[in-house]
Length: 211
Image (cartoon, rainbow, N blue to C red; front, top):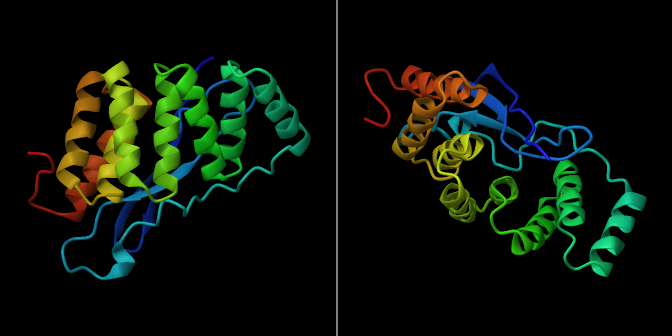
């Protein structure tokens, strides 16, 4: 199994710059399973509501319809084989792709219970928490991921996203992104982190996020 590549882009939106990128690690065979997070710099204190970033549930990707026969077969397989990690991950990824995040959470948690050191599953669980408006749970899960691999790039990118737009903690977001850039500046994740930091500085001239 291998993690899929992050995809990201730049667009303009209302108050300022939006950086959008895929933040799931989604692994396994077949097409990449993605969840696009619309990411904008947090509004300054007292700014109008329309400047706030979209809610985590505002996923701009179209959900992929569930293959119900495959879901049924995998569910039966998981029930018949309580130690089958792969079936649980596949179910979680399918539900994630369909934007049915509560179901994805269930299966990611079952997979992680069987293999607690799977950093990709841990981070995908954290992303799922973010999409159901549980940023604290997301950050807690990302900390578990970083306890397994302190240099896990997608996790560090996600920490910044959730701190910025789930917690309005721009200093914390900048710290995570700067750590990511220090580890892998030329990676897709590192480039996305640079763009996010540039967006912060453009939105708040004269400030140095994370300093």
